[in-house]
Length: 212
Ligand code: ADP
Ligand code: MG
Image (cartoon, rainbow, N blue to C red; front, top):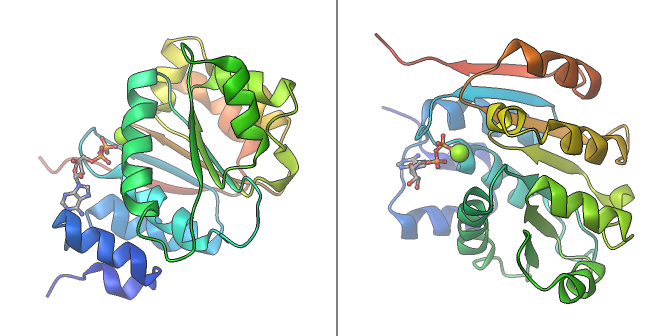
């Protein structure tokens, strides 16, 4: 019998969320990544689009989060507003089920910057945004990098193609050295390697290739 999500020991509110979404069985990448993220390991996850990478990091990060602390604990970055918005939708769907409120903030360009600075200064538990705006919020001292436990770089190959890797590198350089870093991508081009070597500490490589 295939495994369900119960055995990962995720917080019950996340299991409820999965039930409401009609999701019962983990995909291969979820199966292999959720335990590592829960343990605090660095991860490089490669699999093609549509294989369930979002929940592979979102579920364990939300499960580990401490809602009693008013601190930004997780930052997730994606290359475009649209992708960040999609991640934010998944985040809010699942975080809304938490018995202790989990606060979230989407930070992308094209929105009122001063209002955003105010909101980010309130230390939302989870921030999702595009690299440029996240860096902007760090330079404004709105984001407190010292409290951040986990940093997710989604669609890393697109970050590279769109010229955002430099911003992502600067963001990572401003965070604590013991930060958990998770990098997801459909492909892992050679040009990403220097970044991965610089910031990931004994990462677990999870490579899910389509069966031919
Ligand atoms: P990726 O980031 O790998 O491209 P997503 O995380 O965006 O993939 O997931 C693609 C779709 O699959 C989403 O609609 C999501 O709700 C759905 N999905 C994710 N995990 C599962 C699962 N375990 N079972 C069924 N559907 C899932
Ligand atoms: Mg994705």
